[in-house]
Amino acid sequence: MSEKGLGGIKEFVFDPRDPKFYDARDLHAEERRIFEICHGCRLCAGLCPSFDVLFDLLDSRDILAEALEDKDLDAVMEPCFYCKLCYTKCPYTPPHEFRLDFPHLALRHKAQRFKEKGATFAGRMLADPAGMARKARPVAALANTVNRNRLARKAMAPLLKIHPEAPLPPVAAKTFASRFGSLPKPAQTREKAVLFTTCLVDENYPELGEVLVRFLASCGVEVILPDGVDCCGIPAFDLGDIETAAAKARKNVAALLPFARAGMPILAPVSSCAMALAMEYPLLVPGEEAKCVAGASRDLLDYLADLKKRGLWPSAEPRPLGEVAYHLPCHLKQMGVGFKGRDLLRDLPGTTVKVLDGCSGHDGTYGIRLETFDASMRVGRKLFQKVRDASGPVTTECPLSGLQISHATGKEAVHPIVLLARAYGIG
Image (tube, rainbow, N blue to C red; front, top):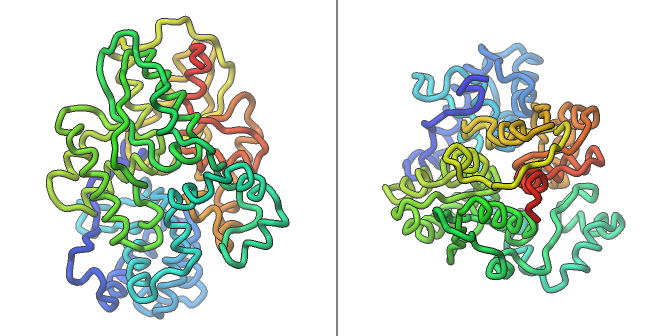
């Protein structure tokens, strides 16, 4: 797969500081311009519901994009869930003169709507997953029981706007940060790395963070857990709440900047959060500081592959895993780092890796909202069938994709670091 097929897009059309950013007339003119380009190309057909809606509108009326009404623009932009897969197909992304950036155009549309109408109670709640988890933590066992109870979920759906069948991440009784101090350090520290856990690892999957720290310790890498970090901001970003997303980005840049300037890699074990650091923060926070943090940020598996090349690797003899089904998340594909998780697993003796291409349809809030859950399951149906047909363990770098896959197929999907730790006997 080419670099473009694995993302590699480095220039974007998104500037909230532009005076025209919130100008509805300018936005609608740009949308009609972009839609007409898509109308004549259609390499993006079938990638996501937005393009299905767009082409159905144009074809059913036999019109050009300039004839679309404002309500049609809403109908096209609302289903975009920011998977960014269109970047891997579109021949007109920057620096091409057409400067086609559909995901950020959809985000600008949602930002315009947010500025005009604000957010609902449910929208504000979904945009703050860390806050939700903190409130539920004192009663984590009860919260998890309620989340698994279909009758309770149905009763809450009208208020929370969360689909009663949508799987929700577990609430951890103890955060990763509270467990970090008891985790082992390397017998001999060869280098240090900063861990940007994000709320998903800290509040929902602390065990993933523990495995990660133990594995890195076996490689001679001491993990630093920075103070003062917040949610990466992507949930607020998806809502169109650019100010909140930018505030979180500024807070995280300030917390991570000293480490970036010291030359330490900043690791994000969740692909969407890694993408936020590397690609969205320089757009949200102007200046060299965000660029410095973005330049220091690394996808976890990309960093592990580099460690292995440099000989910083567990000394134990790995055991075979047999056949492994590997899914590359959409946001990791956009980062253009390649199939590093697949490659590391494939290097294990007695292990074959089957790559399962396709989008899980989750995207954080899209996969759980009352009005979009069914659509998200339709987006993921081809991938889900590939998972059902595969044998052996299933792995993906995105815990939310793993949650969606497990819900749809009944097969547990774990992070590649979990399988690597299993192979090397690191508990």
